[in-house]
Length: 201
Length: 251
Ligand SMILES: Cc1cc2nc3c(=O)[nH]c(=O)nc-3n(C[C@H](O)[C@H](O)[C@H](O)COP(=O)(O)OP(=O)(O)OC[C@H]3O[C@@H](n4cnc5c(N)ncnc54)[C@H](O)[C@@H]3O)c2cc1C
View 1 (tube, rainbow over the protein chains, first blue to last red):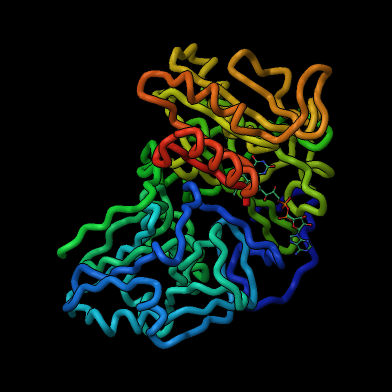
View 2 (tube, each protein chain N blue to C red):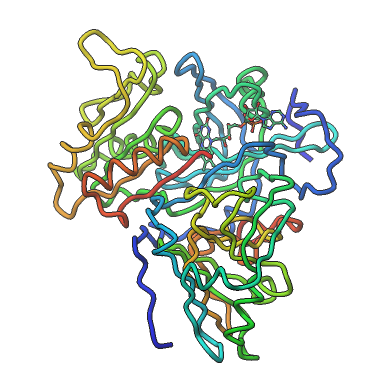
């Protein structure tokens, strides 16, 4: 351990919800996207699931809203070290979309892509079983554009770069294919509890 | 698959360089060798990092401080120094009110102190010195852009490079003494006699886009999220292609 002379840090909080190396950002919600925030209205938004599925399909805003509503209330963790507690998102569970397209048994991974061209890769197992959503509401209001509105992917158990803003679709694959940050040195899976920030972690 | 997806707005992928995962995975000791005041709120911290593998202008690193009981605080910082400065790196930190890490640097740190760094990180905002670069920053957002300006000078590069930098006042303009003809400062609160005061506007960006170098500009925007939103919108409105805009937001 390399102790920094004279560094005490903030008063310690016993917070079992805080993954290693993270701090509580409180009310702040930093924005870290690397691209120009798109001008995307709900009427222009679509979400497609294709690749290794029985029935590829594209939903528009209204069609997606006919699926059963589902909410997430809990924590989110950004690779830049902030975490945010007790956030509330609402939208539709990804399971509901996947039930319609029916993934092939051979599908093991997915690439999520955005209306901006941003991409991120995930194991399919991280997107199923009630652990991932398409979210369009934050704290009871429409999701703000700079946070990915009209709709973003939400995979709160992984670092937040996996939760693609302005989500446009998922392509199911039988192998892992690195996305934008993953090609820029970030970890393939990004589990905050194992501190998988960069490839090699 | 019957349709292929074409994004509405495109994005400047891929990154400019491949990133070393070995460098990113290893914590290294960085020894503070010098502190230079830049403005009343910002100072530059120079470190010796003997095994530093080198970086490209625009890249950042992760820095970690450790307390006696093992508690750690880690933050990202852009690298201010150019790659030519081998074995050393410089960071420029704003003193954030109540800030855990920047507070330690501005109130406690002195030469000889050791911290830990890992990096360089991310190839997306890197500038290898190849394409004409249009740099737009505000406040400490000028830090990674200064690494590009310094690299351009150190190598005597002829590729066009322009810097548009916003600060509250001349006293708060980081690196003020180092800027040359490539730089246009914009002051938002107070300015020297005869220089207008105001937010960065279309009128600042338009002349740069009107005088496009061959192949067009690669634009690099850095600063707070609010500034990045504002500046990137100005660029898009002035006709800069969305897929030639790279943004580094400090959060
Ligand atoms: C890619 C990247 C590059 C960056 N490059 C630079 C750079 O070159 N130069 C630079 O100066 N900055 C840079 N930053 C910002 C930097 O990472 C830090 O966010 C900044 O230095 C503030 O950190 P801090 O520990 O001093 O403040 P923090 O302790 O993180 O506090 C930030 C603010 O939140 C408040 N706060 C947060 N948590 C608490 C809490 N638990 N209790 C009370 N108050 C709290 C603080 O009072 C303060 O106002 C960069 C960020 C990124 C993402």
